[in-house]
Length: 134
Image (cartoon, rainbow, N blue to C red; front, side, top):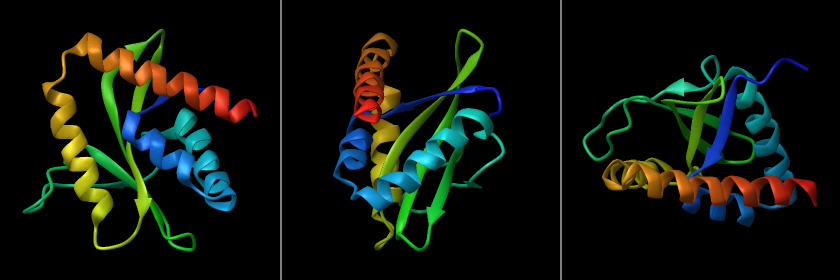
């Protein structure tokens, strides 16, 4: 296995979406999350700003067969020697809802004090780790 270079964290609402996935979809997402830990800067399609959504700096992983998209952002923050990747949204590929959710969450994240945001993301990360162990 390649060395982990990124610390993957969930936006709290994206974690709720992750928990609602059926088993086959969750397995696909888990594989993608493992890939993000190693190669987040190399995978996914770069997103830009559109009329309704401002997602420049974010990336998308698309699972056509499952009809799911993951929107994530690589931050400029570091933990130990790992860069942080925040999962903004995981949603079905219908009417670009995932892009609107990610846009809203990214906009709100920019307004939250750094300490409060880090605390809420850390809680979601802990729940994700605990959920993986089950």
